[in-house]
Image (cartoon, rainbow, N blue to C red; front, side, top):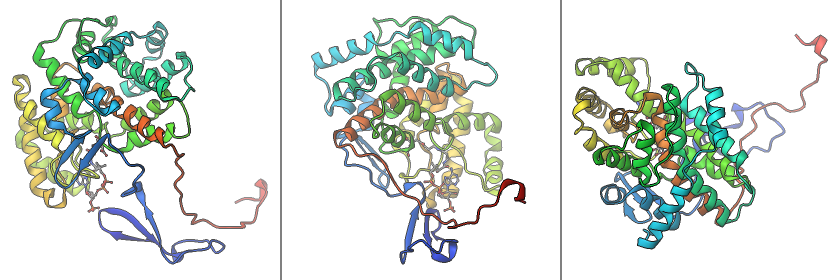
Length: 403
Ligand code: SDX
């Protein structure tokens, strides 16, 4: 078994690397760990240009959407392939508002199982979505109409669940959604129990727009693969949240902030990078399977994080770390990704660090839905292969005689 190319987990297997004698071994057999380079579908939803550092949603550069659109418009765009006109926008927003309220059963269950020491908000969110799926009717009706109905429910309700978890954690009562507020404004209102400033609402909105979709990433693949067996949407989103939670994926935003806190001041950044290099550890918030240049989302988030008066120290550490890592590893395509600057903004908005990835999930649910619907139109169950490198015809020994 040999590693063909450094940095790419593409393994060329040879017969010598395996025990098997019965298996018909082809001349060459390529194993692409992490499905690197595998193409699962044709898509119009979005495009990640890893060389030029561009991200497109349904034809629009993400920076343009972040600057000009709101989250409702972007969710509509991802799902329906066009920006909504006034009437479509009003209907879509009303539909989301009608779906905001959390069933009392979910609040009760969250309250019972919430262990303040050990429960991670992403685990609670995953469980809440699972409970919502149990309470929901007709989940196995996989028609586009029904999936859309359930998708609207999920987009609308994730902020309600997250805000309720935040408040339960602080020993406070969850706040009912305010139907006069827009999606993101209402998210912050339910979190703090007061209407956010226009600036803070816009900050979260921009971040949620930037996180709404990103090609066939790990959590989207999980969602799509679950749905491709014609399972229900709630199961797909439960799986996607589970995948996003991992620190190699959305969970990195949480670790990044914890590392900033450990670094403490700009004077220790160099030492931190050297220590990581010596231990051959990856620096969280850097590197990407597709981007080999600056992640365009990180560039936008950096701009907004730099303007926060209450996060000056944190931003300084981030900026110097960014510079150091890019100087050291930039030539190998290692640059900040979306998870690097987002946490500074979330902290400013009053989210606790272990809630950061839940915000990513609340934003990405629109992309998960759009990709599921797109794949469903020409559905095929996922079934990649692995290669058996074990033995054949082993002799069975009864338990008493086993060494
Ligand atoms: C997200 O896919 C998406 O689109 C995801 C996402 C989305 O919007 O959905 O963009 C969101 O998940 C962002 C990524 C968040 N994760 C992190 O920040 C964790 C740190 N980054 C890495 O672990 C890594 O870069 C990944 C997981 C993001 C990508 O992994 P790959 O493509 O499997 O790359 P790899 O681990 O095989 O690394 C390739 C090389 C290695 O060096 P060599 O073995 O070739 O010498 O790059 C090096 C790695 O050691 N490398 C890093 C590094 N990331 C990769 N070196 C130092 N620090 C890092 N962070």
